[in-house]
Image (cartoon, rainbow, N blue to C red; front, side, top):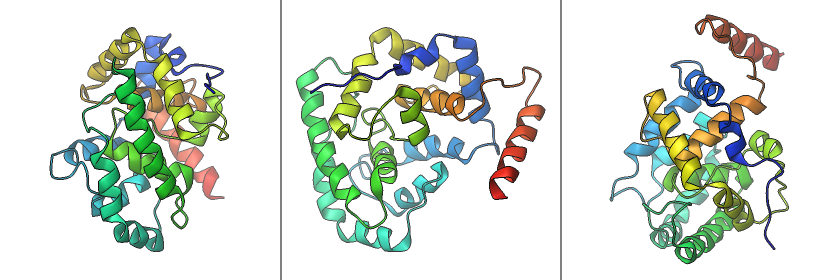
Length: 232
């Protein structure tokens, strides 16, 4: 059974200027730790790292507010060879929007097996598993995030492949080109279209719908106020 989102990811690109503002705000140094995530991914995509869960990979989800506990990290390390076997079956340069649908679906099937393996590890779950996977295959596997999923109208009853293919169905060449153009405008031309959409949707869904147009001072203050309220 196939699934479609209630609101497709591409809808967040309809207002390009707003999307650019959301992405630019997220990537502003010191505002969001997630801004450190993407350059870190690029360092981990070399031929010696793309099929291996490195120590850095275990810390990376914390940049997206998904800290991996010590016991969980130890279990991942213990299963490193099995995880590498799965990753070797998923081409590192394959995109979710590749024209060869059969090749994409075959790779997604391997990714789903790996997601299930990670999901079963102590205190990992869907969100952390998806962030580990996205770190290794950022052009193929979208992150599962509860705010983004809610905004899309996605149900966790969807299988991994159903969630991923729902994303694929929306990634037309025009959407990919627009995402890449917005990434270039932000100064990070190598940012995955999947990550561009993830950031823009998350920023919008998490409450930054009316970012101040006059500089970042008001945004910084708003971030500080929200963080302070969350600590109470």
